[in-house]
Amino acid sequence: MNHAGEWRQAAAGEDEPGFAILSRRGLVREVDGRLRAHLGVERLPESVGSLVELMEAVGFQQRPGADLWEHEGRLVRAGESPLEDGTRLVWTQPAEGDEELVRRRVRYLGLASHDLRGSLANVRSYAALLLNGRIPLEPKAKRGLETILRNTDKALAFAQDFFDASRADLGMLACERERQTLEPLLANAVEHHLEAAGTASVALSLELPGGPLPEVEVDGGRVQHAVEAFIRHHLLRAQPGEQLRVRARPEGGMLRVEVRRDGVPLTEEELTLTFAREERAFREKKLEDPLRLGLARQEVEALGGSVGVTADAGGTTLYLTLPIALASSAGMQA
Image (cartoon, rainbow, N blue to C red; front, side, top):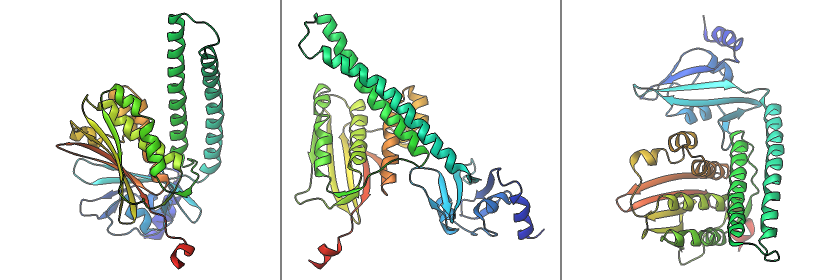
């Protein structure tokens, strides 16, 4: 049977996943014809270095923060998994007709977020009202209300992260971009955690270059959340006497923001799993920190940047990069 015949035959069952093997040398070998049918092509590239290269070679663009790829109205999910012999299994599955399902899911998440956050906000409001000093309280009752206030704040933050991460999984994370400098955001992120760092006997500082940082076009709230997620991750592991430093510098066409912990570095396994949200949650039996770092990655990637982690004998560095905003026409003329 020729390629066109195989393609038509595979198209009849195109709701099923399609597979291909990517060899260690980058050669593409199809398992069946469905993958071509999903992508709408009769031939695949003979050699590619990764799933991303494969998808881009046939014209597909990835939606930020999701495994969805689209090209000329065609929507597919795609992924790859390493095999024991060093090759990789690449898969695709059509997502046509998914749009309305995604929109319904996002609306459902919005309703759930509103109901849950509304209830928690009411609990917080009443606890704060009782603590405002107008009503005499016994020490034990005051401590109980303070505990309720802290835990409610924690639950509200966790709920926000959970619903944002769920929206990001659907490729629908809301981002409001604005051209700005990051110095105020970084200063706020550090200030918000000075008390927690002091309680842990950890030094926390902001180190900026002598001149102003280049502007970026980002959602400032998303960037600050990511930086704060890095700080909190380090604080969970920092030992008394260690130091956290938040730094930023231009690097080529990108702005690099680092949160460095000078102290005992992460192990190789911990480095590999840093942004693995589900795997870390299952291993650690805790969801909060893995969720925060996973969402930080989704937020930065939705803004066209990337995240990463490195370690050396002196400590561990979490970092993010963001594209530097192009100079405006008025600025260029000046």
